[in-house]
Length: 271
Image 1 (cartoon, rainbow, N blue to C red):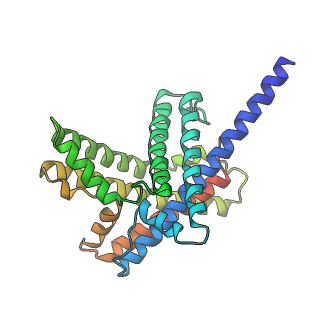
Image 2: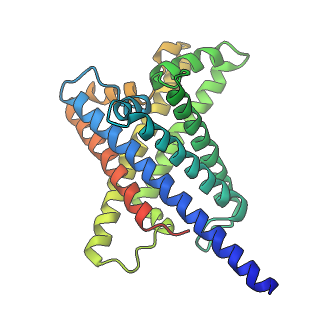
Image 3: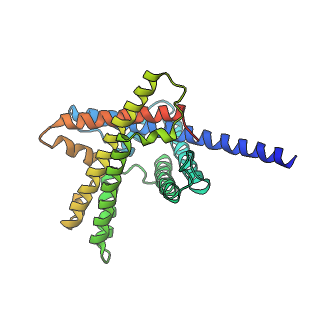
């Protein structure tokens, strides 16, 4: 009887984790698709748009039942944080899921998504969550630069973000995301399409993180918090390169595809 009850509890826990994973991944997809679309509008001349989380939330809130949609995003991000927390505590799926490095990475992701969820809740209740990522980045950078050894700390954070971006790119190219997906039963062409989305989207996402980290290092070296940039200004900086707005188009399209890939992960998660 006890073994039977334990089995029921285990299945219940597994189903709850699976639901959290699906909800979190689907929500991540919504945000990246919206940011990608906003960045494309900027690339084609609409300078009024803000291509970051606050812009995506503003876009949602302006739709019918917008407040409900924003709260749904907040709940989805909470689910994402809980899913990653479960991986940190109990281990992720796959043969290496219980390794310390995997658990540490899951814990870091859990904290990240918890912070993002809090900002979305703040936006929903009208308590400052609507500030752009650029404003937040400059304010935080200014405060840290004013602290003892703040310049070194900002530089180290920037290096960490840039290295994280490179890791994201390498992981995408190596198709490591397959460890988190159950695509064995998919038709070969469908599987190849999903993998292509993961590679293109992951590389674009990694490029944005790497650029943002490099910009933060530059702000630390020059001791100028105004040079720090959030996602919106980081994306706009791609349009200022010799490639012009077409580089921004490429990156924005990649972010949009990463959002679609997140939806695919939500359909076929391995948890």
